[in-house]
Image (cartoon, rainbow, N blue to C red; front, side, top):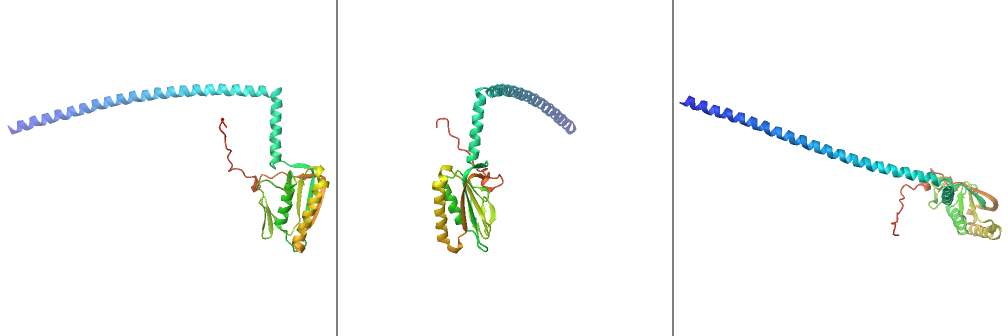
Length: 243
């Protein structure tokens, strides 16, 4: 009796195991079917997205081609005149910013030191400031173009200009471009008075100063490797269309 009962229980257990396996296989098949269907839907959606983006890029390409065609048309006739004016205006800005060499009438101030004497940076700064006040449109010190960020300061045995060190015991040459009509009548007399004032203040420590007006003074451009040329930190402020 006991043996028969155990056989019945074993048979029921075996049947339950078979049913469990069959149920698991059925659920797996349903999940696989659902997963495959989901992948197909995602793939279809991606294809639709790619088609839409491709259409947008095609439309953008057509717009760019049209823009290029308009530019090519502008390069003839009146458009060429406008382009020429823009180039000239850009060049003028570059000259004003010190990025181009310049030549015109002006003055040359030569500062000579005596042996054992060191040039004072204050003397150079005073002449540079006075030249700016007189309306100089371009200034250089030892062929270093002065721009808005140019520094002139003494450091032990040298004077730094645009990050370049010049020996304080050597001579310094300041060049400036000014209006020719003002040179003889106003600029030279004023600079001579500045020179006399410096000599009186410094006495024996004053350098010898020579000032001359020339019909042609050449001032070099600011070199790109100078510290004053850097502008990588500058970001333009964009105004809204309403402003």
